Image (cartoon, rainbow, N blue to C red; front, side):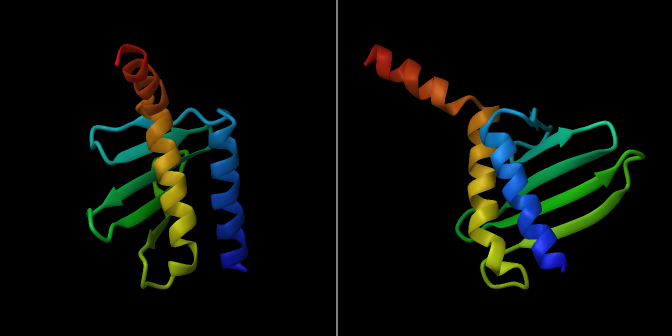
Length: 109
């Protein structure tokens, strides 16, 4: 059951991010992004470079971490690794406005 819910959560976060319905923010850590709603927050973090781990934290409205999920290529959640990696890249591109930066560079070269 938890895997089905996790798959739905990742899918929904990706879809809502892609359609600009979630306002992800950059944190003090350059590899960590968060989105806050009135009753919860979601934190997405990447650690490592060659074989990174992705961390997804679900935080309740009082700031307590209700769930912390680690995604790595070989661990228990490896089934969702690629989806979370894609979500992370999408979030990062949106927050850092990478597409706009690329467009600006292309206009000037």
